[in-house]
Image (cartoon, rainbow, N blue to C red):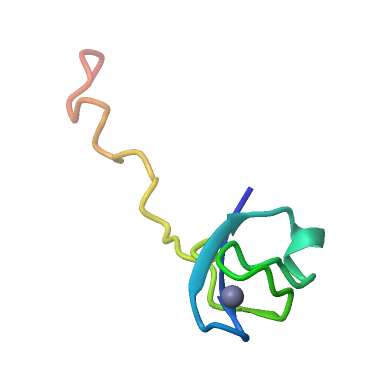
Length: 66
Ligand SMILES: [Zn+2]
């Protein structure tokens, strides 16, 4: 599950929660003051590049059958 960051609208304290996609759109309860008027910040879920590719030079360059 992705990790979402929230900011409490009442006390202004940030907090994080692991939520599913359906839960992320709903306001979360602030662990500090208990208010439910929280706003979701940018999540860390969208961070990611295409750097998980295997190296293309894994095979030997010369073949014994040439
Ligand atoms: Zn709060």
